[in-house]
Image 1 (cartoon, one colour):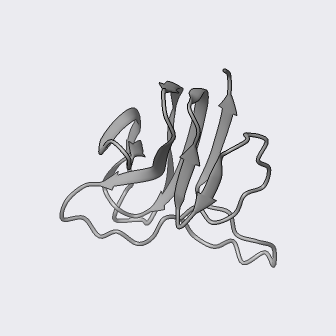
Image 2 (cartoon, rainbow, N blue to C red; image 1 turned 90 degrees about the horizontal axis):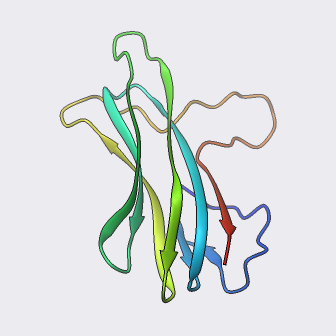
Length: 122
């Protein structure tokens, strides 16, 4: 879940309820998310406004027997002509035991799992 904005230099952009709102423009997008146990997985950028997947990311597979941690990414360039709402999503293979989107380090600092970087190009 995305719930914290570290830096926002895009006028009209915002984050609320795990959804990123972007004004019209051309953007460079990079998102990553970890998974702990879950078989096949894939990262995706979902356009909530248009019900589409404008960017499809990397695929991977966790070793379900040993509880490995695996990270998938989605990146690319997209142009939108009007304000749109987006979500960073993950696909998990059907029927597999999904055990969360990462594992806490218990280091005493804030835990960071999924991250998104968006740069407005135009």
